[in-house]
Length: 212
Image (tube, rainbow, N blue to C red; front, side, top):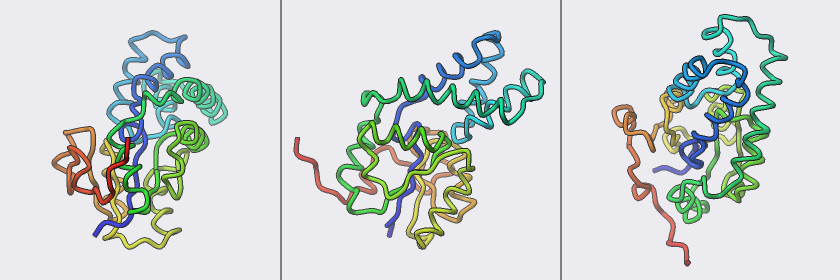
C-alpha cells in the first residue's frame, strides 16, 4: 500500500512550462531565435533536468563554446529572478493536483523532488500556499536521482510503499534508479513506463472532499 509520495513540481503541481521557456528566451536574448529554439526543444524533452545542465548544454552543444561554472551560476540566478517574479500567480497551479494535496496531505507523507532550483522552489511553494503539504522540498543543483535517494534515506521509507509522480522520462529514471514505483502524469507518452498512469487522482485518493 502506498504511504509516501514524491512529487515532481513543474508540470505536476505548477503549469510553468510557458514561463520557463520565456525565462530561457530572456537570459539568452542576445542570441538568434533559431538557436534558442534548439535549447527549448532540449528543455521540453528533458523536463526533469536542472537549468544548470540546460545552460551548459546551450553553450557546449548548441553554441559550441566553453562556459565556466561562475557564468552558469550567474545565468541561473538571472533565470531564477524571472521565475520568482512571474510564477507566484496561483493561476499557474494545476487544480486537480492541489485538490488532491488538500484532501490527502494527512493520509500520505509527501515530498517534492524537482529539477527547479531549490531556493526558488521553496520560495514559490511558500508564495503559492502549498509548502505546508510537504514534509520536505528538494531541488537542483543536486540531481533528481540523488534527491530521491536522500528522501528515502532520511525518512527511512520502505521502497514498496513509496511512489514518484512525474511528467518526464527523467522522473521515471529517478524512480527506477531508486527502486520505487513511477506514476506518470500529464504526459501520455509515459503510459508505457508507468506502473500506473494517472488520468486523475482517484486511484490514490484517500481523503474527503473539501468544502467549498
